Image (cartoon, rainbow over all chains, first blue to last red):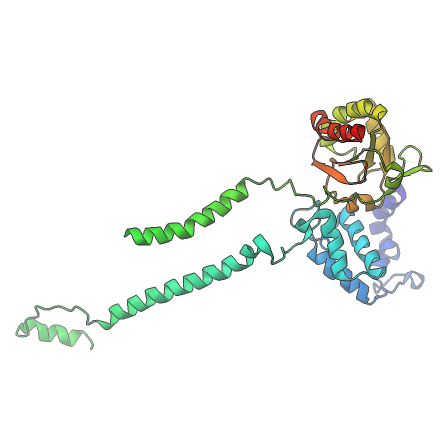
Length: 172
Length: 180
């Protein structure tokens, strides 16, 4: 622990040839012996499944974070559980069922479209439909109103000598 | 505004208000556990004070088991400590097995905490990889599980448990045992 802290303190002084070269392998001035390449490990099918399942499960000790997004120790251990269960040959649904068995449906980031949960899925759609219908009815009423002749001035005196002057000013 | 229009407005608004009012009556911290009524997940955990020895749920079949997940960093655990320890002293001779399970903590910290709290009447176990905590659906400390003689979870307490609550759950289990 102390040694690591010392290394961190010394790193800026002794330059890129120390611990920093691990992060920046192409940095000039780093000793050839220190040069490291970052090996890109391709994501396996299991990795992809773990990521997929972890993204859909809630981290129990966080606020609104998924297991995939949480850096907590519990979330990390739970990701390990997902992985080992997949490696044992369980299907993603079986893994999710295991977590639902211990934490309940609460563990799912998105509630299943079943029973009372349906309100979450149905109500917004229903509200949009009802709103659209209401708007349509209102629009129809407005259009019917627009069809009627506009009430213009009724007491225009055509013989008014000033009228011609105004009509020249107002473009038609 | 005519009465018909206000009735339609009410018919739409009332269910929404009722739904929101229902939401207010629920405590978001009390997440219902699916465990009570089901078989307790099996475990085999080493003792905090002697890592060479372990205990498994199968060894405890026929006994009432109280499993309390706790940690030295957990403030609420201090609240329940006296009650749990007293219940351990009362029910230990009657065959009830109390165990603490250290949750996200080191044995060293756990031992120091117990010394500071003036001791504990029952042993604690370690769960380094949190497998037992995950099996039991633990999301914080303290959480207490009470398991009956047949290995079924009968109660889960989220947050500090009281002496009265422990009596309320354990006494009927012991009575049932006595009459059988």
